[in-house]
Image (cartoon, rainbow, N blue to C red):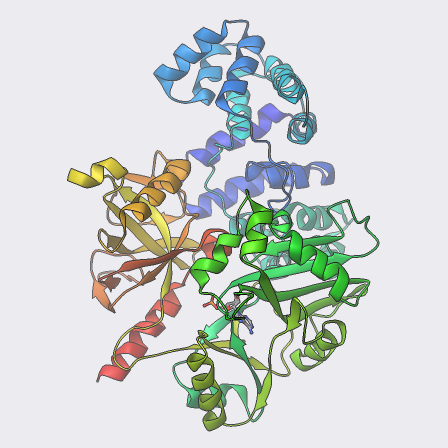
Length: 589
Ligand code: AMP
């Protein structure tokens, strides 16, 4: 397919805010693609050239792109800059300057190849080379195509399409309905690579074989697995009821989740022998040189994928440090300095892959046994403590002990459960401190919009935040609270920095709201919020059905920025919120 034909679809998608329509337009597009193109389009739709977890960024700055536009359109750089100041958008600049130009035969693959080259060029002279490649592509393209290409290179493409919509559209394109979505989703959960899954689905001869090929997809070292997530239950008795007569209980360490991939066949200096992914599936390997070395030395396996919680400790007192300290290790700069200052321990709690085999279908009991065969109980990497318990009394006792030793609570695990990538379920239950009558668990909200401030706040650029939770069934974000207090000056400034990067000029397609902030942002940033109570409110769309009121947070305040820890889709869901609301009422009555 020609790139210019792809951008006709981009235009349509950009102008659409109904999810059903988005899916239909997208499936029309996908139907026309060959197996060689489908993966590339899956990445381009997200403004990328490779899966999101690969640290290959196109990342060109305005001041490089303006040179490429000047050269492609035969105008001076000053003129490009003047026009950019007037239009405020480099995409519109190139569109105007290319007006009337006829498109060439550049295909999606040609453009993808160019972008890939741009993303992979580094070192001396790379700026000039990147500009030349971009200028070469722009010269060949019509106005609309040039606009979208420039947006991609500046990471400003905003089609408002989430992964679930792409999965639906793949199914609709091939089967005529959404019936293949669960199978596609499972393969996606195991690999996090939309392009890879789409290509598998597109490469088989018949529709039946296609689905079979997707069903066979297994974990691969180097492709991060979408993590299994925990459910909540209100008390020890409900846990025992759910889990049966025997269950595993582990401390809930309050650090950050790491998914470690080890493949000893890869060269030690290739950066691929050990890779570490965040819960959000970002590649964090470069942040933890100490853990990388520890994995090489301490883990007794040829190849493996395991998960654990990293937590900083004070090497003198051997005490664990609070989350606010641990999280300082997630940084781009001064990595070595902080590795020495805040050493980490990694508590491994699950094994997903071992020596060439995907073992997610084994029971937790068996996975755990294998985990303790490859990781010992001392060293920088240790297996998480575990006790097999049988009653609510035993559970309460262990819970109290963990709280007394400064931990967050416990995780309870079903012994016969497989590992369900990307799923929240009762195979894992998190059990945190619950005080009677009040909401003591925090809520992970997604930043949806910003109210610009008045008075002193104007200086921060932010006077208030509009935040929401996730509606899983509809794949949309719904509002739950406006937050105007409970943030320090520094936190307001940080929110402003974040919001400026993800600001958009209209309400994103996946946001449902009855109120309008001063400006909207892409639903990306997760904030941990503490509130006194969940109340009903006609203003918010969380859990709102028809004329019934929705749910809202009373006296919300910011606890932490979850940063790389959570994706927007991992925020608290509407059904969790409603459960928390019911639980809170039950205790009160
Ligand atoms: P939450 O982030 O509150 O949903 O709690 C689940 C998180 O607890 C996981 O994603 C892990 O990062 C963390 N965690 C801490 N200790 C454990 C453990 N022993 N087993 C599983 N997860 C744990």
